[in-house]
Image 1: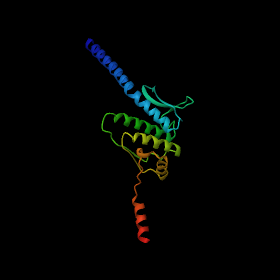
Image 2: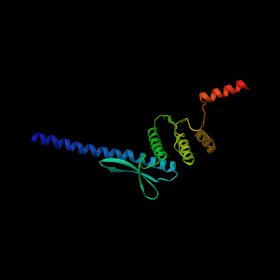
Image 3: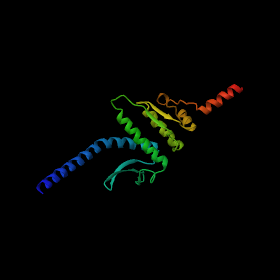
Image 4: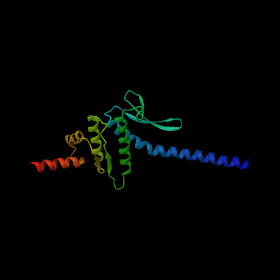
Length: 182
């Protein structure tokens, strides 16, 4: 019994110390990342959300977004529109990339069909955020719809954002058949 109590005591103490260190690491690492993601999310949603915060529910940290009215909205499709949820994901992703490229060789940021759920105004905000990221690393966005390409050109973000349209196989065949017919 004495050995079992001693072992239980050691394990309980180890568990307590490990939980404390995990909390400490989260606070040191998560706070700056969450603060940057919050700024990006506010920009991407045009101020529809002003902050992000973590709450503990059922022993787990849960991310929530706060509206200017003070309303807390659960993250994900249950509390947000699909577009807003994707904007939050983009904000978190960019904040993570920005943090990871500090002091090291930057890695490219690749995204596919990024703006399919964004409205026009939030697409422009997203393009501006990507142009800002483009000042520190290469940003490549695949298959943007034509209005996104046009918005990118209209914003005139100079050297921070290059728009390169790639011709699809169908477009190339159509162009070639028109050229040979004419």
